[in-house]
Image 1 (spheres, rainbow, N blue to C red):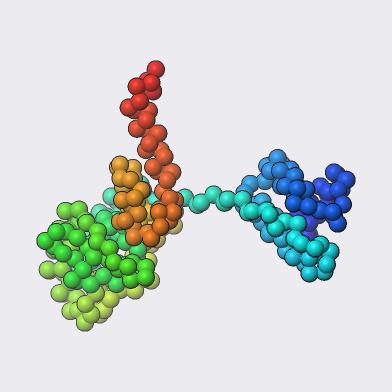
Image 2: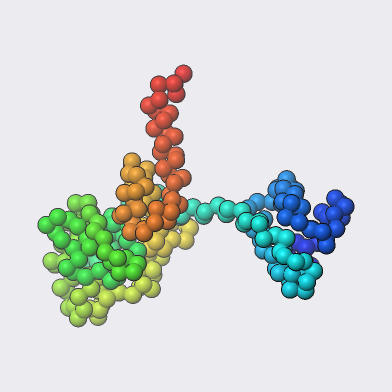
Length: 272
């Protein structure tokens, strides 16, 4: 039996048990049905799928004139839990950043790229599209063009600045640049997204990180570690270049844990 058929069968069984008729189905009856499903232990994702099946049935029933209007039109989908972003521990980040051999030109390039992904929370597209003049060494700021070509300025720490300065002065010229992108391949042209992904996979394997990670994992780690260190969501929103604070709220589990810890540490009644 398909999932769609199973969902309809479940509704019919409920109606039969309660002596309700399908032709008299109302929004109140459906509310009772959803309450019944929740009591059985169905989670939000399963309930949302269940409602999708019922809406398909009701749309057909209305088109066939079985109902004057959709009996489920007042029902809202349950809020689905947001999937927490995958991030690396500080120890895992340290292992990854230590791997590239900075005595070689490719190793130095890779080291600087990893440093910037973590130091600035960059998207992979922002990293590969960055130009030499997007770094201001006088103030230690990166100019980044995010989604919709929206510009933002991101400060980077002194270690990342030192590596980037060294790369731009001594390493990048050895690639014999034919394009003005900051990070180049062996032919002196800008790197591709796929190229950066492959490098991340290689270093993750060398660092013995078993789970799958991507360039975006560095961005999640950047945001998570900032919040763990005491930054507020609004600051992280600006640094990540999120247009809306709701996009940053996937990290609220970190903020909540930090606030709980601070409350327990400093509230005068916590130790009683």
